[in-house]
Each structure stands twice: as structure tokens, then as C-alpha cells.
Length: 67
Image 1 (cartoon, helix red, strand yellow):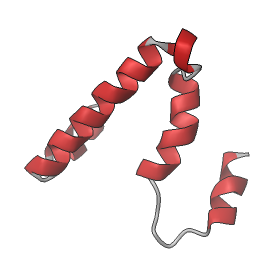
Image 2 (cartoon, rainbow, N blue to C red):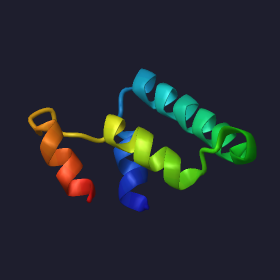
Image 3 (tube, helix red, strand yellow):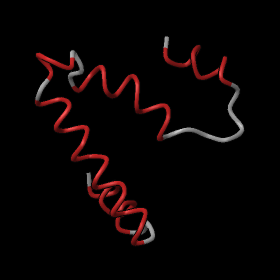
């Protein structure tokens, strides 16, 4: 967890602010999972690959890695 905090702290100010807003939004969506049908696991599956990816990765490789 400490490493993640350090990575976020190293982001430029604007990126850090955007990241915090995104986390608040995802928290709100998850808190309303009865309505949104998007709990933490579903959000991680859908949003995670769009946030954390290598630009050189092949989309097919990403799908195979998730399996």
C-alpha cells in the first residue's frame, strides 16, 4: 500500500486530482451496487485495464492474461 501511495504522490498535481475524483466516482458507483450492478469486482474488471496498461501490449494478450 505504501508503494501505491508513493506512486500517486509522484503524479503531477492535475493527474493526482483527476485520480482522486475518479476514485470518488468509482466509490459512489460501488456504494450503489444494488442499482448500478457494479460492485468493486465488476468495476475492477471494467475500469482496471483502461487505467493500468502498457501501451505496447496487444489487446489479445490482455484478454489472455485476464483468463
